[in-house]
Amino acid sequence: MRSACMGALQALPFLLVLVPFALLFGVVATASGLKVAQTMGFSVLVLAGASQFSALQLLNDHAPVLIVLASSLAINLRMAMYSASLTPWLGRAPAWQRAVIAYVLIDQTYGLAIQRFERQPQLSVTQRVAYVFGASPVLCLPWIASTYVGATAGSLIPAHWPLDFAVPITFLAMIAPMLRTLAHLAAAGVSVAAALAMAGLPSGTGVLLAGPLGMAAGALVETWQGRRTARARG
Image (cartoon, rainbow, N blue to C red; front, side, top):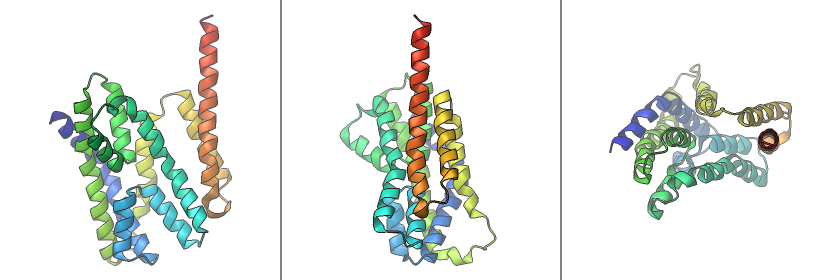
């Protein structure tokens, strides 16, 4: 119970950016022609803001369906890496608990969980699962509710409110504490530089290329550091 309460408490600050992020998605989705039910289906079933915005933007740009699917899949591939990263900590949990976590696993949930697990490796599997279960309702339910508010009452929101500020702030708040090694910095730096350099490519394909480039850079730096350490040890 204490772990669940801690998860809920530590998830609360993310609401400052998650709520306007969801409001913005609801507004943009309905403005793009989606019905309220379709917008809610998007948020409930996908539950991944970055890929939702990406897919919506590509659909508005009349990109081919294959590009829309490939882009969304590429963006959501990070969830596979999240799952692999959490397996040593949660892999022994019952199957139904892992299934629930697979659904509620979003960027903020992962960021909170992995940092707590690494700082407190003595936690039991039950305590780790409780932490995720405590944080998830605080993050996922407001996302769905705020999407509905944005989709149904978006016209009442003044146009000059800068709701789009939530998108970069959300990811900066989540990623910045995790850039702890040279490999992390190399991966982030190369992916950002590549995405900016290829911003002019059609249908957001620059992002598809920037992600693998960043991962390759991080892997190369990590390999170089490992060999350097091995040589130093003789």
